[in-house]
Image (cartoon, rainbow, N blue to C red):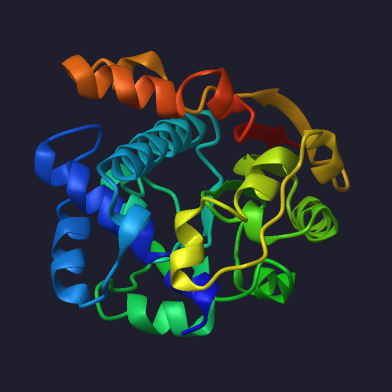
Length: 259
């Protein structure tokens, strides 16, 4: 498994950690997979602050996905770069066909914990090469890309949105990114370096991701106050300063696109 694929264990640990503490999300699947994973994380990768961030980010993506599933009842759901995430369990398919997409060795690992069905499919595919879209059945799509865009160049992201635009009549896409400053800073302090990742990308202008008729529509709050309020005392203060203040916005952004 290459270094990029190993990054999937960082959010897996974070979701397991917060779930066990009863914060942000309930994710028994993450708890069970992490306990069986036998993967060692070190240093910042196991920081409780990063775990809190991963938990809140997952909750934000979950809530957006649920909202889009109500707004687009005939759409398929596509989770690009799914890793070992159990969003399909946390959210439920609710009458939608759900596709989890990731590299072949990740999907092979995922098959040890998840079972395909008529409404849930796993596809081996690369976000930089959208030939896997031929395996997706549906006219409209809800697409989530959590923790993925920072490994794709602007040109690769634009090609992805072009491919989605050409494949579907309607698209709703949520993407979190580094800023260009955040990508530069990652060379000095970034947990993904601890699993061997050395190249990441950032973007300041989300319209650079526009492709075909898929276009940027709005920016979302990465760390909503409702989740900060689940923490208490000094933890609440420190987490808000680390991940919800002005400094954080200089590093991370959350963008929505529609067609």
